[in-house]
Amino acid sequence: MINWYDDLPDIKPKYLAITKLIRSLIQEEKLLPGQRLPSERKLADTFKVDRSTVSRALSELSSVGLIIKKGGSGNFISQLPQIHSLPTKVNWNLFLENKKTTYSSYQSEITQARALNNDNLLDGAGNELPMELIPKLGSLQINWHNFLLAQKQSQDAGYLPLIETLGKIHEQKNQFKTDDQTLLITGGAQQSLLLVLRSLLQVGDSVAFAKPSYFNSSALFKTVGVRTFSIPLTPFGIDLDVLEDVILKHRIKLLILNPTFQNPTGEIISLEQRQRILKLCQDYQIAIIEDDVFGWLVDQKDEVPTFKSLAPENVIYISSLSKLLGSSTRIGWIVAPRAIGQRLLQVQKKLDIVPSMLAQVMANLALTDESFDSEIAGLKLELTKRRKNITQILHEYRSEWNFNSPKGGFYLWIKQTDPEIFEKLLKKNILVKPGPIYGTSRKDFRFNFANFDLDKQQQLRATLSKE
Ligand SMILES: Cc1ncc(COP(=O)(O)O)c(C=O)c1O
Image (cartoon, rainbow, N blue to C red; front, side, top):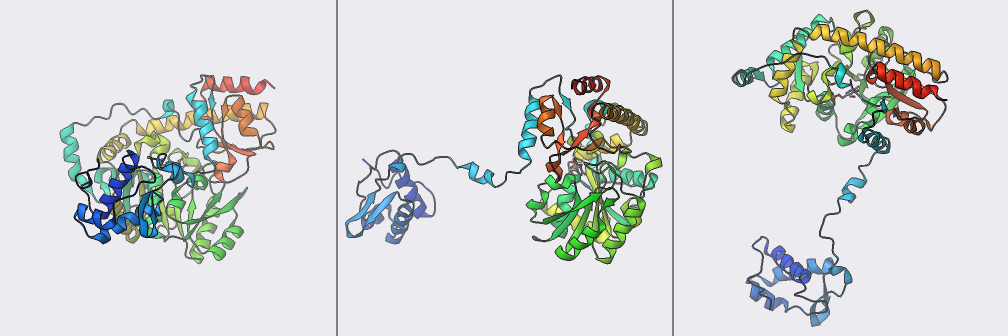
């Protein structure tokens, strides 16, 4: 016996409550296929609602095939067999399908190989430093009371002592002054880029970056609805003729560069090229985003003035602690001309992507630790040793692989002729990141040498010498 009125769910609007009730009666088989429903008028009386409310509910049920309206003879429960097998769960695959990227298959093979926890794995696919090379900064102590006090020193742009520390570091490294700029703290370089794109661009606007580039596989651009154009890197740097062409054809608004130890090539853009790029961008009123996440690792003798120092009012500078202290620190920052900085701060607040105060206080302790400078100096020396040894091994056993030995960073960008190289190296337990991730061919790949201590160097030598 159906208790039409008592079983009616207590939700509004009422027509939804009625559809819900009839759906569950069908599911519980209290209403069977072919069964006739009480008339609309009767149902309206029973539910104590207007007849139009019942009519709307029945129309909804009819539109999804759960009931059939038969002219003058009334409404019947549908005979459709799928009534019983109606999926009760949302099909999330429909949401996920169009979010798939072409890089995911490589990434999942890399993840799988790592999950096997194989001691013989020669992992050159990492994005950052291995744990053992991350600077050892002793114990960064702060008691809770002092942490609570520290929060009083926070501004919209972040934790003031951290802002001051970063300002000093840029000035001491002779990169640029931050006095007449806005320096704001973010949750990392990716987040900085998201903030800049969201704050300055409209859906459909265009940006350009190099090819190959780390930015090629970033989901950010799609997320904010921005079109991307890639400019080939030549042995002399970014191809300026193509850049000018693309600027003219596609009304580029921003040029995004990673000019020092570029990911993945490890190259540094020369001063002369920097000046030519700046001139071109000035001529066409294009802003530059300078992503300098590897800037920490450059030796003084190799340092080239930052874009920010060459044109402070035309460049938005981005950096983070990820390539030095690990990406889980989630601390980055932006240095932007004041007017832009204000906009960024507003959007950061609006989107509520304000970095944790705890992380900011810890970051400041790390950056002001007395062993910080000596640790970075030690890190650079170790990276140089690893780079030289790996370069030598590759030259010895894979002379057909072409690559430049960069001045620093932790990547080698290798070109060769076999499109199956990723799969072949994987079979030998060697992981690399293939070219398509960076927008180029399967014959190219990135190799992170930072992960190779003396043991791993020996293993690599032994593996490569086998054929
Ligand atoms: C050039 C470049 N920019 C930004 C990032 C992301 O940095 P973060 O971890 O600070 O978001 C990376 C990480 O690989 C990178 O290589």
